[in-house]
Amino acid sequence: MSSSFGRKLARASLLLALVCLFARAVAAQDTSAPAYRIAYRLWLTQPASHLFDVEVKVEGLGGADHVDFQMPRWSPGRYAVFDFAKNVQEVHASGNCPPRARCGTESKAVERLDTQTWRVWTRESDTVTLSYRVFADDLSGTFSQLDARHANYNGGSVFVYVVGHKQDPVALKIGAPAGWKVINAATTKPDQTDFQFPNYDLLIDTPTEIAPGFTVDTFEVGGKTYRVVVHSLGPEGGRREEFVKAVERIVRAETAMMPAPDYEQYTFLFHFDPTARRGDGMEHLNSTQIIETGALADGENFDGAVGTASHEFFHVWNVKRLRPVGLGPWDFTRPVVTKGLWIAEGFTNYYGKLNMRRAGLWTDEQLLRSYAAAISGIENAPGNKLTSAVELSILAPFIDRSTTDQRTNLANTVVSYYPKGETLAVALDLLIRGRSKGRASLDDVMRRAYEEFYLKAANDSYYLRGRGYTIEDFERVASDVAGFDLSDFFKQNVYSVAPPPYEEAFAYVGLRFTHTTERRQQNAGITTAAVAGSGAQSRLLVASVQKASPAEFAGIRPGDEIVSIGGREVNSTNWLDALNTNTGARLPLVVRRAGQDLTLDITLTPQPERAVYKIEPDDKATPEARALRDAWLRGK
Image 1 (cartoon, rainbow, N blue to C red):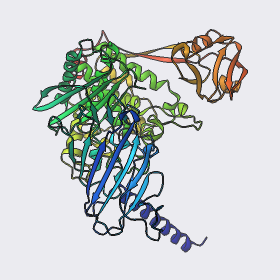
Image 2 (image 1 turned 180 degrees about the horizontal axis):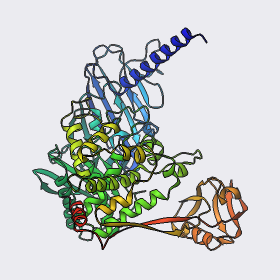
Image 3 (image 1 turned 120 degrees about the vertical axis):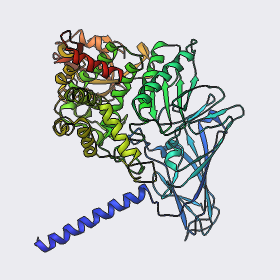
Image 4 (image 1 turned 90 degrees about the horizontal axis):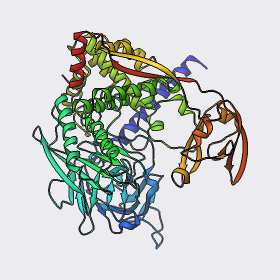
């Protein structure tokens, strides 16, 4: 290859790359296009069918020959790709048939372009209307549910957007069955069914509950109104008042730490539903939605909901407003790419727990035990030694509740950015407090970052105030606030996989960081999933098999149903006991595969020891260290 040809090829490659980047930017937002008038209608005509009826009317087309509508492939806050379009059906549109098409009885005004996109031809009309139905029967922070009990939607799984016009204002009208009420963060008056949103992104950032029965309790903090909505599908045991007061304590603790939020009201949406498939929590700009799989009367569900509220409410600042680059505005045609989820979610994990203590809902012992458990989990995970916090954030679409039929080795190569970021946050906070002798803290870093990137920065898009920050931005702010250079911490512990200096960090606040070892429970390299029942009635399926494990050597495959181990019938509650009573032995294991029972011989090997970390007060701590600890725990 000649050097001149090589230079031409390089220039061509660069030009192509720039064109691709430009095209992606236009896909994410096209603020130059004249605004359309966009109005959504949502009907709940047959709740038992689990089908939402949706209509989108678009006016002011200005001569455009077509309008494209897209269903998001994923939604903010949950980064796995779910392809919500798979539940869209019966798509129709007003308008004329496409150019060059035969306009007969078989013609259609809407053409499906790909898995998530529909095109409606205008033929010089100034208005088009798209209607469709969405199947929804999954109560969660990501999906939606419609049944005879209620309707609950997360907008990304229900509403299409107009391509190139996500930045345009939108209206929404909800048609609910008689006697059903509507509540969401935008609700300002009783019986409200009409809403206005500045853009599509904020429309879908407003989860909504529509039901004949839920309770609403309110309180005020700092001149702001807070609403606690409780949708109970089980007994409350007279604990709702106590529950609301616990939520209020969280709000007071977190608003005392961070600058005053820029909303007039905030809404907590709680569901206590024993039939829900799993618990969940999801942050939104002016609200959160939290699901517990049991009744409020149950102490475990009560505590779980309060703990989740502490995490989700801290997102008011960290992620919804103070946000890393990549988190808004959104390109829903491809997975999100951001390097900062270890801060956005991991630091929120850290502060969610710390504010449980600062609110007086946890003891010192509970807090330290929880941090120690997070450190134990991270430091014993093989993926922690392979993948950095920054790379874990980039891999969020693979990690955040993603499902796949493909066999992967992710269990051995990654960890969750939630506890990873939490362990980095606790070390960083205490290092800053200790090395600065109490003059600075991670609290100060978060406040400064919020001020610089959200309150004072020029807006980088239509989406929200301020701009997204880079990891380099955050490192600079942290070092400036701390009063010393933190580049080595970021180089070793954030961009690489070295464990943070836990002992030094905890020693600054008069705590001893120690560890012991224990033998892990034998699982032969098998991860299981129970299906079709619970307890002794469940079937036990192999979800994954660890590479080079006893299970893999024995020929066990994902999808196998484990029937017996060592001649003992097993289920989801007793299979580990059966396995561990035979550690070191060669024993028969029966699996059911493709309708046939196969007997495989498995040879168990002793499990390696795992480190168990503890964080305890040091009796020999100096008065200065004790004072730093007190300031840390009380938020001073």
